[in-house]
Image (cartoon, rainbow, N blue to C red; front, side, top):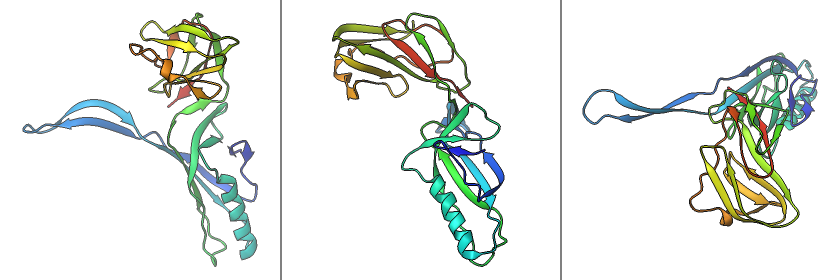
Length: 232
């Protein structure tokens, strides 16, 4: 079953193929001014796509178009949503439909109607289940994503707190003041907010934002670490 934003693909479409692409590799290199070749710098990654090929089994042109419109409506979203595909249980892709299906008016037997979804911000297969561990407790984040899992530190403060530090042993970040409310520190986006309002003005100048990483680790501080493991 193909599910997008919690809704199954309409059964008026007979799915013929589902093709998720690999994440394109995008090497960064500096061209040499004199010698042949280039100096390799690092490897990056591009956007993953998912192509869904289907057919509509009716020779009534009006009904056929109604069914195609229904499929396109299912695929529509104003922002990136969660796409769940067969063969990848418990995981999803964060994507948006970038090509809707279109068909010939006369060729009712036409096959190979396609939808294309594109993953922009997060091209990795991401676990639906979120894991957690209290700060100060060692945990293991599995996964193969180059820049680690999706990771946040969350905390409920009944009173304001001062000089709060979080560290993973390599990086350390301090907030001079945290107001009362629901604190969310997003380690991937490097943001911190209480009740949705940024508190980055209280971020200490000499701090280093913690980087999400795979493997065994401990994050010290007060609160709870939440993460979703990601896979290539």
